[in-house]
Amino acid sequence: MATDRTPYNSYTEPGAYVESGDSSRAPSVYSITSSCPSSYPSSYAIAPDESKPLLQSAGPAQETHRNDNANSSGTASPISSVINLSNTILGTGMLAMPGAVASVGLIPGMLVIIFSGMTSALGLYFLSKAAARTEGRDASFFAVAQLTWPSAAIFFDLAIAIKCFGVGISYMLIVGDLMPQIVLSMFHPGEDLLFLLDRRLWITVFMITIAGPISFSRKLDSLKYTSVVALFAVAYLCMIVAWHFFAPNFPTAPSSDIELVHFSTKFFTSLPVFVFAFTCHQNIFSVYNEQKDNSQKKINSVIGTSIGIAMVLYEGIAVMGYLSFGKAVTGNIILAYPASLFVTGGRIAIVILVLLSYPLQCHPCRASLDKVMSAHSTRASGNKVPPPPSTLKFISLTIGILIATYIVAMTMTKLDLVLAFVGSTGSTAISFILPSLFYLKLHQDQPWTTSKVVAALLGVYGVCVMVVCLTFNIMHAANPPAH
Image (cartoon, one colour):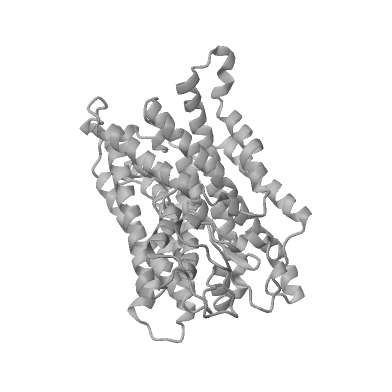
């Protein structure tokens, strides 16, 4: 599922972890390929099993490729690459899409989905062009950064950490939102069991028993089958929305509740949700490394197909969800439907998905924070790649991330607001700003072609989205509108 679902680490030891947009696709969330120069020992790796891509079901397993083996080839088919990238795109952002459309109107909402998909595709294209400049099949954010802006690695890692941390929070919010409804529909608790309807209880229970313990693992390969759950959850959500839209006993919203066009400052608070929904750029490097034919033409085909699939699904979910509820649509569409066995099954699938996907956000967030904290000592020692964290540091970082996620999830209740903040910061940097900076740096000595102009415009657009939308979201959070 988005969510955003969807997270990676640009400078991991010695490979690059790639996330899900949302993030929430286990195998696509982290495809791991080596990017450590041959001069660095393999012992720098956190765990030997992490050299294996998680999307085993989508294609044959890949061996770890190193720069000293540039002639090695990938084995993934175009179909498996599309599945990989699509799993990364289709995350928790899908749940918030109808609400995002409601805030801008039906027609602008549909157009913004298309525009967001197109700009996302441009970012993927520029990253794939940058990947082609790396040696062999070792493309990663780390490798590209070493060719372009090695001194800016700390800022790239901060963007990654923010993105992963925010997606992890959104997962816990979804658990807190859905579990009380699942309990109500299945058990009908009496007054003595009303505590079971407290969202904070379920966030606490699942953080302690499932999400937290798994997050302490250094290996991610055991979670590769989350892809199956993710695809099932996405398909289930689509069926729920479509069924209730076409069902004769579930009337759509009155025409007075449907706004074709709605221009207001809400546009700037909702735009980052659209940006977040298409963020999958952290996974384009694994696609490039693993695809058998990774020519630009084939990579462009994978990008176009994946973004196209996401556009169609997002348009369908957004339009049918908005027309079903109108102005009353919530920031999490799955909460809007009446309790039934059919809907409850979908909610359970989503809860299982986000619980299994949370560790996939914690892992790169921890690795990125470790790089940020080790940046000074790494430069002082002259090493390009910092050593893996000690056991104490590893545990301390994990506990810190879990506690911070828990505190924010317990105090915040609006999924769309969290996605808006993540979209206007980490997602914007990864989707627009970094691709632009990489491409322009790699082509700085070449004349200004159409591609360079478009790359520059994409970067300017990313900066504008980050500054303007983040400002409006801060104002919105500080002074929420009266209801």
